[in-house]
Each structure stands twice: as C-alpha cells, then as structure tokens.
Image (cartoon, rainbow, N blue to C red):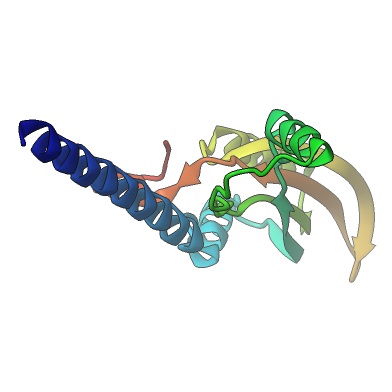
Length: 173
C-alpha cells in the first residue's frame, strides 16, 4: 500500500516538474516577443549622443533572425533508429525562442571631422552597442558650406536590455 502511495506521489511530482518546464518555456518565449530595446529609446539615444551641428540624413535599422542548428546527436540517433525499424518515443518539439541581430547604418553630415569623431566616441561608450565603425567620411560642398559626410555602422549587443535597471539607465544583462 505504501509503495502504491509513493508511486502516486512520484507520478504527481513528475507531472508538476513537466508542468513547470512547460511554463518556463512559455515564459521565455513571451519574454522574447517583447522588444528589450524599443526603437524609440534607441533613436533617442542616438540623437542625444550627437554633438551640436551634426545631423543624420539616413538611419537604417535592420534585424536578422539568428537561427540555431538542431542538435546533431539527437537527429543522427533518430535517423539510425528509423533505419533499423525501431520505434522511437515521441518527444514534444521544444519551441525555439527567436533571437535577432540588430544592425544600424547611419549617414549624416557634420561641420568637421572632430564632430564625427565625438559622435563615434560617444557611440563606442554606449554599453548596448558593439562593432561601432566609421565606414566612410568625405568632404562635400552643400550650399556653399564645406561639410563632412560620414557613414557609421554598429550593432546592438545580443543581450541588450534597457528594462533591466529600475533607475532608468540602460544596461546589458
């Protein structure tokens, strides 16, 4: 009788653990669907970091989904079992949480190279960005004024999250 009761308790515990795992997977998926760095906050940060006189003429933000390959060991083992005609236990497919690489390309004009350099330095100091690069800079004549045209590229760090600090400062988890 005690063995039967213990078996029921083990079955209940196993069911609770499975339920917990499913709930955690759903929570992870829901969290991934929420934008961790809103575009409005990102654009405000770019504008706040621009020195006086510098202006953007083009801002391109693109997101590329990062795909992770399926586990090789599981698919290879599954293929061997199927080839031998063995039956395999159906394991529910784990929902893949989408991850994105966010890249930015900024084109603009500035009065001098010093303005471009200050902007580039400010972007490099921003802890949510990585791979900040000055792609090109050239002198140009705009309405009888000599200006510097520039192009800067950068990427958002994969784990960037502005929601992580309650005091309003941006952070990377």
